[in-house]
Amino acid sequence: KVKTVVWKIVPSAQIVAALQAGEYDLTVGLNADLYSKVKSLSNIKVGVQDDLSYSYIGFKLGKWDKAKGEAIPDPNAKMADVKLRQAMAYAIDNDLVGTKFYEGLRRNATQLMIPAFKEYYDESLKGYTIDLEKAKQLLDEAGYKDVNGDGIREDKNGQPFKINFASMSGSAIAEPITNYYIQQWKLIGLDVQLTNGRLIEFNSFYEKVQADDPEIDIYQAAWGTGSNPNPTSLYGRKASFNFPRFATPELDAILNKINSVEAVDKEFRSKAYKEFANYMFENVPVVPTLFRKGIVAVNNRVKKWDITPGNNFTIFDVELTAEEPIK
Image (cartoon, rainbow, N blue to C red; front, side):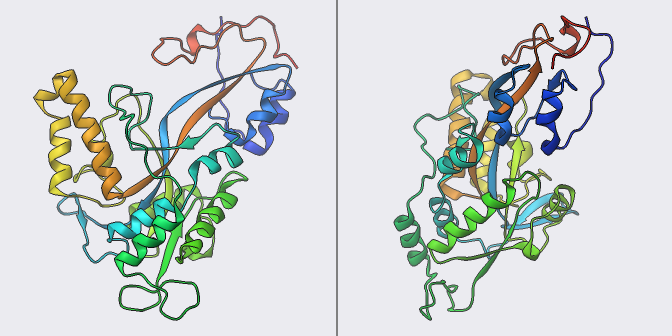
């Protein structure tokens, strides 16, 4: 039995060599782009499971009112037109992103309810899949047209239209993925540029997003849902983590259903969650991009490490079969 546990934070660029050298018994939160390298190590076993999280692209649609403690939507926000948001969602191929950049360990997220919550996940909702012609049609209908023939659309008043995109620095694939999204939006005639011309460090990124920085029109991030799928703390009117600042009476009513006494009834609750997923799909305050898989790498001297959802296996249950990690 293990008597002492030492946790360390290790840069992703160093972890494969460290595991091979037997420096660590267990690595959690391993980047998906390292999967094949770690899987090939003879002294390591790899476990994969669906994460209770998803990646998304959010649209800034208002501001946070500190005095009222609630999100205040701005009908004149740059990204306020739902057809503009839908067009940007139809311009990207997230299954391709999952295959090319994450070794197939991530896939297109169809909705804001992850498949792990089977009772609340709407199998019939297929989400946004790439359709460039539909994206262009939506932009035409919304009045974003290429007035001067340079291939880039102007706004509804015929003025230059630039969208500022905030994205985090981090892994080696952060920049290529960001560039892919920008490239796809250019194909439908949208001028999307990185906020301040560069990727933003993690802490600074969330400070800017939470502060409703005027230099951010859209942003790429992720939510961890935890074991409770209730979306109120992320998308409720009074939720400080409602970074898009999206709020409507219709959404209020849906969330009230989810939090009502009637939701004790399994069928009522399931219907309310699916209503939420469909409403958010139609209104697109955020585009869910990728359902994610978590990876854990375990040294062969660890007798057992159980990642089955819902089990009670913890670090206190770990047993080792050798004095030192196996190399």
